[in-house]
Image (cartoon, rainbow, N blue to C red):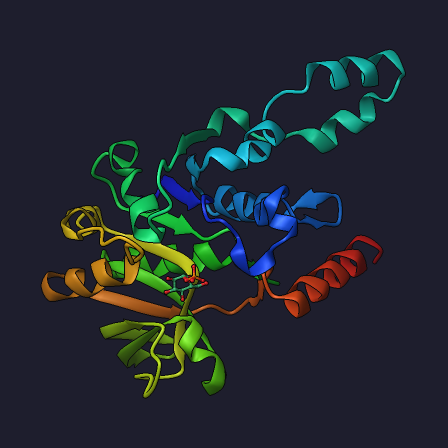
Length: 270
Ligand code: G1P
């Protein structure tokens, strides 16, 4: 089954400068938790046991956040505020960290996890996409499809035409309501997107994706695209897309960020 996940969190966050100069976007607060914690919780609650976070030199705040805070814990105990300790509980033994030395894109960040994954099918969750579901988690929905198809599965959302140029957009045939057998995927199509179905930060891959990622050559100034490896994967393996039922928030977009803060505030005060 799907027991391991990679969360790439090494990007510069250029869309959100200047704040991302000092605060990684993965640490943007949503209520009292940083954005990345919602994604980690989604993974763990979907049955993932081990998570590799791929960070970069300027993302030490993420590593610090998930570390023990001995002084603070001692302070809370001394001052009879032990009840607050439970708020800080995060499963440190299930989190692993590594660094992406060069900013060479999403595909490069994922291939760094090859030895961690050790030839198993695995999940990828992009931490700037938060999916809030009333029922099953987004990742759980993909795992359900994987169980039936034993093939790679990509989380999809229908996106307005004028925004498709910001996404990987699939071409596929609907085989069952909301499930597509993929024929192609185009990264950020400038014109004529093949559909209105975009990849939105949740993936299950067979380990074959690594050989395709490793085949991609880095060209200065260009990122190594995960989408290019998926296109190669499609030549030899079936690959499915599944429309996720939850609401997706892209925390790098001001409107979505405000919406999710309000949503979490509302849920916490219900
Ligand atoms: C990445 C992927 C893209 C996907 C998107 C989802 O793009 O390359 O295929 O649709 O995430 O958020 P980025 O937003 O990192 O440019």
